[in-house]
Image: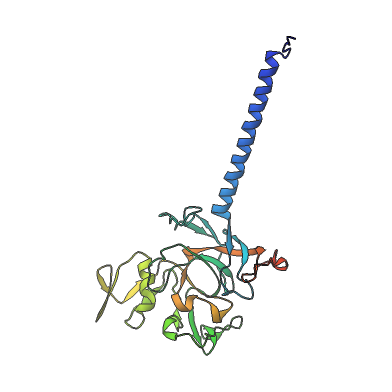
Length: 278
C-alpha cells in the first residue's frame, strides 16, 4: 500500500527551526553559566583544601574551605586559572580593607627564606599575628608584639626544632610601605630576600651593602608585610621559618567549611560542614 506524508512542508521547517532555537538557547545558557563560574573562580571565590595540621583546632587537615577573594582587595589572578602558570601582570590590586590581627588569611606562599619565589605556586592558610610597622618577637614560648604578649596563640616550638632553622624569631621590625629600614650586616639576612622580591639586586660585601649597584645603609619598603602563624604553633611552617607575607600575596580569607573528610580515616566529618571560619 502506498502511503503519503501529509505533513505540510512549512510545518516541518517550523519544527526544525524550533529545535534549532532550543539548541541555541541551551548552548547560550551553558555558555553563560560557564562564564559566570569562571568569573567567580577567578575574581570572587577560591576553593582550598587544608593539607596539614598547622591550623588545628580551627581548621583540620581534610577540611575544604570556601575563601572570599574580595575580603580585602580586588585584582587580577596570580596564576592562569586551573594551572600553576604565573601571570606577569598579577600584582595589580585595589585594596579597600585593612588586614587585621587575628584574621585567618589565605595567601600565595612567598617562598622559603632564601628564594625569590617558589618553583610551584602554592596557597597557605595562617593567622595574622604581626602588622606592618610593628616589632615582633617569639621567645619563652610566647609571641610578643611591640613588647606585649599576645594571648591567643602560644608560639612554642617543639623541642626537636633546630632554632637555627627559625631565623625570624625576632625581635624584628615588620616592614611597612614607605618605611625606611636601617640595614646592617646583622639584619640584612632578614630583609635581603624581601628587597630582592621587590625587584632589586642585593650584594653583601665584607664592609658594605650594595643595592642596585649602589652602596647604601638603608632601604625604603614598597609594600606592607605581615607576620603569620599557624594556630597549631608547634606543628606549623610559618613566618618563624620563612619571614613575612607581602600584602600583594594575600588572596583573601576562608569563610566557610563546605566539605570535610578525616585525613587519616577518609570518613566524612558531617559535623564540620557549614562551619564558619573565624
